[in-house]
Image (cartoon, rainbow, N blue to C red; front, side, top):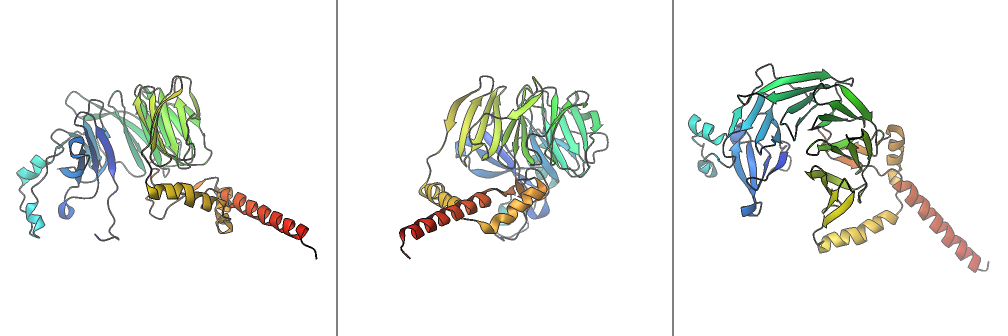
Length: 376
């Protein structure tokens, strides 16, 4: 493959419990046609295989409460109505020939059907989308405005409410919707909660200062909202008492993903491959899953990381200065598209200060000992 070819961002992955499969969208279809789904089923050991077509310009795939799937596209909303595993016959393309595919075959292989909205649909970046895990209502954030859509009797999304937030239109955001609460995580580090019915603002929190949030997830019922930040910290919003606190979990500073297993059960991924199951009401650690480390992983965690940690890093003091000037513990990578979920480069601003200071103290101590024991 061409290493310089730019690929379309991944939409998903989404776990379909009914079909015991993982569905995602990556890359485009054949020669500029609609992009295709990618499906991994448990019976095939989650091996990824091509699936059906999705509408051109699909931005996000959202799981519905009843197990369905909604595709959010720049041209409208579409709902999964057929088998996501149905694909086009592209056997002729393997031999370098132009595949002859008629309109009927394309329609059969496209399991998504239009679902509105009937009114003008014109989302503009920066945008974010979320389905209410309880009601199935769709929330859209676009250039500082939040709009909620609801399915009518005919299976078409209709606008139910809309509100303009008092934020800069260019601010990127991530949203989550559960119960009667809609939470908006903004790139200035603030977390804004809205009433799910009226979209009136309830509270605003700044749990990590100017550090950017990366993902926000709602629990079934909307009691809890988990916000993971780019600096690896995890905070929990409790809508029961309108409070937001740093989660009492291990691995703070190295948390990469969060998911809810139920109304009060949370799964947290940290330390690369470790997953912990927490009960939030108690709270307590229920289970922990961690695969056995390979030889290369052991060498990395037990040799390379400790050596790197204790070595002085005067060349990285610019990261300390950047943190002092911006208040953010991460910086955007060169491949960033501007979205909050894009990976950022951790600065670790105080590590070069402490390692350089420790090196100086150790060397001065050794020098003093040497001079004290020598006769000049």
